[in-house]
Length: 330
Image (cartoon, helix red, strand yellow):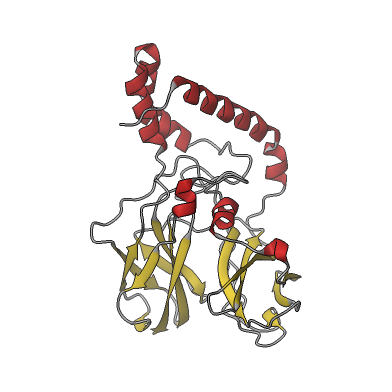
């Protein structure tokens, strides 16, 4: 077993104390700028990366200013790309808060210095994101891991540089039909290289308790109780931070009706609240990985229509997506 030294622990504690102090300073500001619904969405251009065939992929995400409202905006004047085709595979259902690297738009090798513009109008407010091939916007795997919170800003390691994205393979048909209220089973094979090494806050506390001995160990032996108390506490992170560990999450990408996933899925948006079932939340623990690598979820639709479900496998640093179209009838 690998143990952390007392110096490392002291450094961690000092960092946490500083973060807690700074978080308290921002509490009133954060509260004043938080909304549950009625706010707009900022489309975001995340950057671009080259493809092996000479083309380029523009990467987009968004910031939904609402904590609860999940707006639906159909493809058209209020959710469109220009120039060219309005529909470039963007979502029409928007999850709360910050969603990074949600989708990509491929452009030809001769794109040059043109702009691709995503226009999004939500709750009466129109916003645009402008994508270009400027060198400053080029991203790679290290940038993605850093931007999403897996790495500290401007840092890397041999492990992070070796990491490759997980691979999602949806079992069965990509287009399906189901009735309202009828449960649809969805099986997804996820293959991963095991990197980055999964984080586990609770295991770290227990490990140090074994190492330290004495009164400190006696206190840390109660790590379970501390863990439960902190689950009910507000987050202390000043900037986005993410727990490393493989998970799969299915969500609605297109479609306006309510959809239920059983079991509930970890969030793919940056919910930093404790006990929010989010890799960005304090003390989140990655779920167990199925022995055969196949994740099993049951999906139920409450309203008829055509839906696109979006499955994202994420190892903390990198991700891979799969999609299923579902025609829901009465």
